[in-house]
Length: 222
Image (cartoon, rainbow, N blue to C red; front, side, top):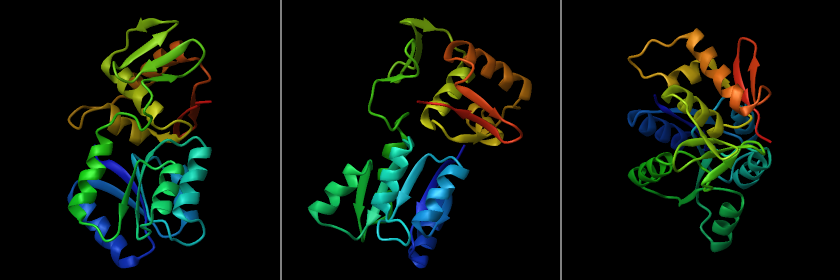
């Protein structure tokens, strides 16, 4: 499955260059040219990484990421910007970014930084994600704990849970779920997906995973 990147870059030439390079390196890139457009796309689709310029129309990159973080979106973000002062760097990290690349930069350097971040299962640095007062997920051991007891999940249930936890409060399409949970050479099954969801709801609570008719599913994380 290709990792999906939301690119915010208002320079048309650079936008095209980055898209072509990332496509050649097996990424799926959705482009935007204004902060408002990127903000709307972040709710319409799910992404594995944000790649944001800062000086863009409507909402600058720092403000955009701060708004997304305030909304509960934890998708990893790399800033690519010509702003190079220490104050700019500090503001970038304060807004919630995972990395900061100063322009001009080598495309290979960007690729290395992207791959390093995507190797992490979760953008959160926490070892445990608290799902409810009784339930938490150990990100290091890949274990779901209910009242401190290890819950047995099969591999696809575990992958589905991790997908939801990586994209809390985001609508995940059926296709996005199938691509993530099933291997490329496997035949996905609607019935199997419903069974996995039923099992997860048994531990997480019925209201945690919401079905959006004909569109997909959303994991509600408070």
